[in-house]
Image (cartoon, rainbow over all chains, first blue to last red):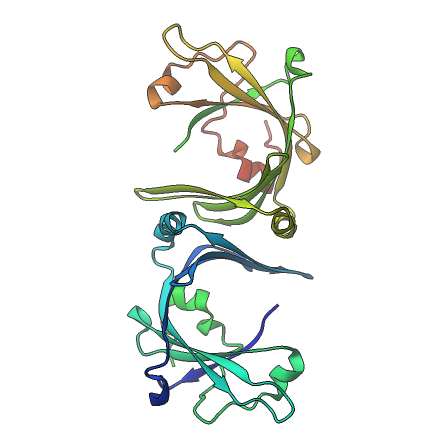
Length: 159
Length: 159
């Protein structure tokens, strides 16, 4: 499973304005308890992802889709979509460890103005020890309203 | 879209006891409104199917799965599974038309004893004009309790 922490940003840092951008469309086909079935379409290709956790069983499976199939399924995500532009930036790691990569997601459409940073860690210890850079804002990791499935269904969180 | 009619049988006809059998495991990963995401595993392979209809948009997409991925996803269908053995039989069509094929599904496990026949038609007219053979029982086409997703979730219908 991925170990990630997520933070609110006030915007895309000026130094990253010209970083390589990956436009991502992400929509939810089915949300059923703690199971989600989503489709993500980007220039890298289209992927169907099934995420679930029930009791001790946690699964995340990704299945590559053909473009035609992806577009047919995309039609079913109406009303539960997010669009965002992803940029990546390397963060200096701890003295002893490897550098980390932050994914900076700038949302568009109904979520225009929302920018978040996500950092993935190799293990729990690295996640706990992480010192966010000053330009990171409030942590959102456990704020369910900022989960992509919530953003897609419920829109911009208040406050 | 498939045009099908479904009928209850009192059992597998004796003449079909030795017909070729296809053991099928079918489980539901997500049920969300009129969207269903299911996995089917048989000797023919494993397939993920996403079925949905919202307003004028109706979609059914099938995606082939690798065996490993299929088994990982199968774990998520606990409590929403059916197991059945499928046999096929050719039915004489109308004088002017082609023969039809009936799929005879004999359920196992909690649904032991349930046997249904499904006939697929090339068009609405053929479906309407179909004369079920005498060994077909009550029609189940519009009985939601006999839909596979209901059988998987709710078990054997009463009465």
